[in-house]
Length: 164
Image (tube, rainbow, N blue to C red):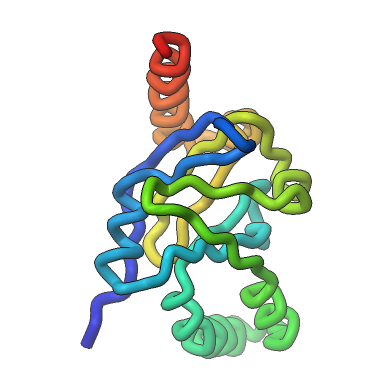
């Protein structure tokens, strides 16, 4: 049985030429290791002010996600709208990226997540998230590690850009 994709680590990208961002190398490797096409599936995260991203192979697990969530809701005697949750999971757009990881972020997603000219990538197991640094910095104490990583990676990216 194939192991599920597990996006680990972080990355940072400044908007570059032709308005493109760059997917972190470790995440590109995860796509390649699973034999996925260079297609990034992007959608608004259902709880956080960021985007959720994944590869096409993750879609095969959506039915299992729905089953687990529905079962958990039933155990807690909570309502569960499987159709709504399914629609949330499937409300993504497919965006190609090149061998260097460059991709163009769709405008409507940039607006939904409040993204500007800088984005932070945070690994999160079968999905990863893409944040506006300002939105990430406004999250609570539970996000301190990601916030510190974002600041460090942003500083490094800006120094590299300035040196060019």
